Image 1 (cartoon, rainbow, N blue to C red):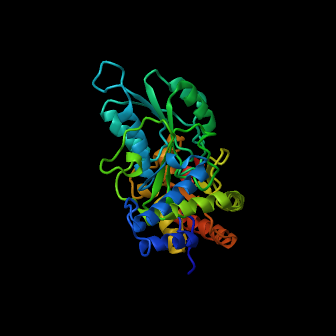
Image 2 (tube, helix red, strand yellow):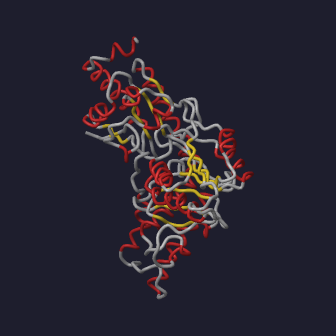
Image 3 (tube, rainbow, N blue to C red):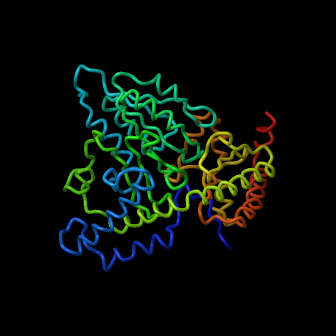
Length: 396
């Protein structure tokens, strides 16, 4: 049975050319990038080339790129780092530092903000509309004299919704407030220009755009006051101590280069297949609803509610038929509670649990979409026949 993979938002396969670029750094070019001898300097050259490649993808400067273990570390470093560097003391009589975020952020941001709340930092969670969009004017109104950071994701991992970062960036710049975005789901799928968006900090993860797992980056605009997150040696200008993961970094750089060169053509092709899948499922599955379909979205993501079924049961049924997709974020699989993203946009708990995310990628084919349009409706129909509540739900 040929398997179909429609879970690219969870992770992506490493591109052959990325793997090829990495291989020498496991063997012949194995030096420590901090060593001053020839072995070390060859490794250092690979790291610095990758830094330039990632910077080019973001329209940043190479010295503004710090390599990390992935998106979670980058998010934590950005948020904790800004708070730690803030001049206000949490024990002083001045108002506590204030952060603005949203309820649909990835747990890497939400849990970091919640940890800071326990330390006395004030956090505002701005509401989103039915499409998961934040109103820029709400950001402006939420800013206080003690606001030190706005952290809002670029593209949502479940819905694909793309936030109006350019407008929010202007508001942040006018207020002289640091602006961070978790761009894990947008880098490699959409053009991302840190200057045009007026960003001070940006997090990305390599395995979301055909680089290996375990490597990511944090863009830190020159002049940003950011306390280091880890303590150790003086690697990466002191921002991120620890021996560099040279093969992973080289792979990230190569993937960034590939994304920059193929972004336009990939985007159009993938968006057309996503639309065909989404429209076909809505036509073939009674009562199915696409979430955030009218909002700006990443070209590869479709989030569909199939009332009357349990999402996890559908995932298992589809996997048995050779199709892989998900109910939401991979790091939240197995959670008892419905998706915090879907409930934030107004879905009921039963509908949130009946929702599936399909995410396409560079290697998705038209034949796979055609097969999915046969497999998914059949699986939904079979599960609905077993559901004692489906007819009552849709007639209510």
